[in-house]
Length: 113
Image (cartoon, rainbow, N blue to C red; front, side, top):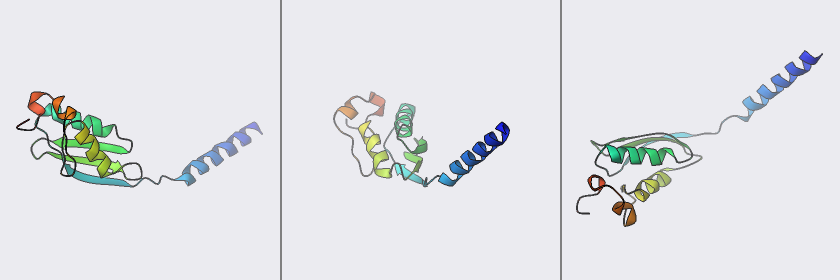
């Protein structure tokens, strides 16, 4: 009898978790993010990956392109670009200024700063 009750509980639990489903909507974007070197790459990728909902982020120094995959029910491109700008890396729609740029190593700063 005990094993039947355990079996029924396991079956119901499994059915419950399966029926809940996952409403995640994975979106992939390419975003231009200004940067120069491997330190920029580490900074950009690390901060973007910390955003809730971001599944992956890879920045390419050759074309300054961030490829990011994220759950659009949890975050969006604007939030991703905002965090890049906050750590000193401008995008086409967000600028970096002041303290964020001042705290970058010299090799990571935009020309003329």
